[in-house]
Image (tube, rainbow, N blue to C red; front, side, top):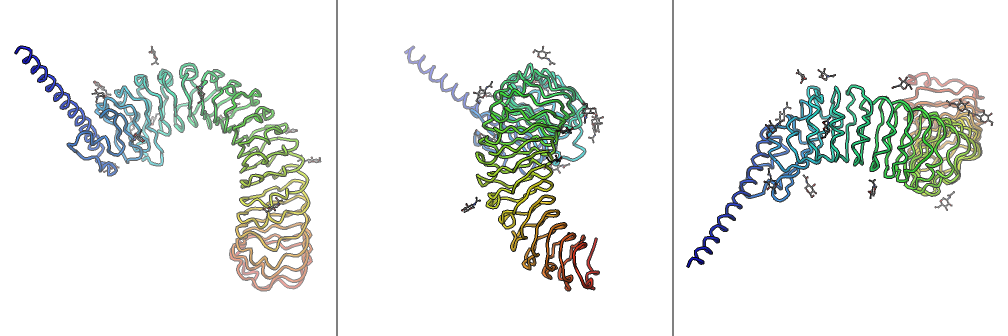
Length: 540
Ligand SMILES: *[C@@H]1O[C@H](CO)[C@@H](O)[C@H](O)[C@H]1NC(C)=O
Ligand SMILES: *[C@@H]1O[C@H](CO)[C@@H](O)[C@H](O)[C@H]1NC(C)=O
Ligand SMILES: *[C@@H]1O[C@H](CO)[C@@H](O)[C@H](O)[C@H]1NC(C)=O
Ligand SMILES: *[C@@H]1O[C@H](CO)[C@@H](O)[C@H](O)[C@H]1NC(C)=O
Ligand SMILES: *[C@@H]1O[C@H](CO)[C@@H](O)[C@H](O)[C@H]1NC(C)=O
Ligand SMILES: *[C@@H]1O[C@H](CO)[C@@H](O)[C@H](O)[C@H]1NC(C)=O
Ligand SMILES: *[C@@H]1O[C@H](CO)[C@@H](O)[C@H](O)[C@H]1NC(C)=O
Ligand SMILES: *[C@@H]1O[C@H](CO)[C@@H](O)[C@H](O)[C@H]1NC(C)=O
Ligand SMILES: *[C@@H]1O[C@H](CO)[C@@H](O)[C@H](O)[C@H]1NC(C)=O
Ligand SMILES: *[C@@H]1O[C@H](CO)[C@@H](O)[C@H](O)[C@H]1NC(C)=O
Ligand SMILES: *[C@@H]1O[C@H](CO)[C@@H](O)[C@H](O)[C@H]1NC(C)=O
Ligand SMILES: *[C@@H]1O[C@H](CO)[C@@H](O)[C@H](O)[C@H]1NC(C)=O
């Protein structure tokens, strides 16, 4: 009897307990639902959150737009780009299990939302804002309570880019967030200039991504940056830095992306390259001197080599021509010399090749378009010799060939004129010869071939070159008469045919030169009268 009672009692207690638990979890869910509904109301019911409506079915808020739950409790709020225009209220952290909060691309005023310091489990916080989404009134941020951010000790990802912060930022407190893997402070252009925080390099050992573009970093990049062994992405571009690129950067084994362009760096690029994972190197627009490291030619994953606008000299490492992933080569406006590595294009899906404004000699690589992806060859202002590679005439994606101011010669591959996408052909000031094409690509808008040895007639088919805006063929050996069809080009802005051997009379009927602003036919053997209607041209 006593046993039965005790058994019944236990059942009763169990039953009571499970009911209680059930009620408690209902309570919990509706509590969190209430918090979300309060949030919506606090933010003046943004239309994008219309779906957030009270419901008695348990856990229904877990499927609301932007909400994720774990074990029935809200753990993630992703409210990026929801037209939120008020600050984050303190009760937001009543969602006590929140690990991820994304309020980026909104219009939240009033600086870093202080309430968030109570969301102690946050691992991921993004309040970055594109300032195009901002009103000026909202750009009134400053990091005015620095120490508190140190409380968010679980943070792994902190995104504060483009927040219009002014004043200083709490570098030491951020450096205390020892779990950080991703840190983005970029594009806070109004921050008071400050040195690169050495403590980031000594304390944030787990960083994989450090994005500090354009935030007024001054002074040198500390050599200790080499401590950040997990670093995968590094962007320090557009800061008024000084000094050299620390050699330790290129010891980082996991570094895949390095962007330090427009950062006023000087000295040589470190020669010892151990960062074999590199995919992008962009050190453009600095004051770098010395040569391109041979080691760049060992980077099997390298896609983009971007070093333009520096003072680099010496030759381009020959092995870089054989890199299997290389897509973009942008080395223009340096002081590079020697011959171009002959294998460029042969082993990789090369798209862009820009080596203009250097002192390069020798020929253009024969196989730039071997893999059929090439969009442009820009090699003007060098001292190149030889012919344009025949294979370029077969390169269907090509948009631009610009090789002016070299010592190239020979005939131009026919395809250069006719490839469907071709828009710009610049061959000025070389020794090219041969006839003008009969037919050109419908997209060709600029033909600049002055100071060469092109000969023969201007074809009558020129009347079909309808998209031509610029034809500069001055200073060649063109002969014959100027076909009347040349006046059928409705977009033509510039026509320069001076210093040739053209003869006969000028075209009588000007059909459609509506945009012509520059015309020079001087120094030919033209005769006859200037047609009366030529004076009606809309020269500008
Ligand atoms: C803020 O957002 C709410 C909801 O989208 C809207 O009703 C209100 O007009 C906005 N206020 C301002 C000042 O833009
Ligand atoms: C919710 O979690 C799922 C699965 O992890 C994820 O795909 C989704 O993007 C998350 N949604 C939000 C709003 O975080
Ligand atoms: C957080 O989640 C745990 C386990 O799911 C739960 O017991 C607790 O009540 C939740 N906390 C809040 C504030 O919702
Ligand atoms: C953080 O929470 C405590 C109590 O839990 C509260 O007193 C305090 O006002 C909160 N701080 C903020 C900034 O919301
Ligand atoms: C900017 O912040 C200052 C001080 O915090 C405040 O007095 C001022 O009203 C704010 N301006 C705007 C436009 O919000
Ligand atoms: C930050 O911006 C606010 C609003 O424009 C301004 O009042 C304040 O003086 C600025 N602070 C600094 C340090 O520039
Ligand atoms: C960083 O963390 C340490 C240890 O918790 C603490 O003593 C120190 O005050 C913190 N530094 C800052 C600047 O918050
Ligand atoms: C480098 O990356 C690999 C592969 O992602 C990873 O296994 C390794 O732990 C990383 N090394 C460091 C130091 O983070
Ligand atoms: C670049 O560095 C030089 C010193 O090396 C300095 O005189 C100059 O002001 C710096 N320029 C910028 C934009 O910071
Ligand atoms: C470029 O190199 C030449 C010699 O190769 C040298 O005379 C010249 O000073 C260099 N120019 C710059 C800007 O470094
Ligand atoms: C190009 O080469 C010629 C002959 O070697 C040389 O005289 C000339 O100075 C070079 N031009 C440039 C711009 O380097
Ligand atoms: C151009 O392409 C045609 C057909 O694909 C091929 O027969 C020819 O050899 C190619 N010419 C060059 C110079 O690559």
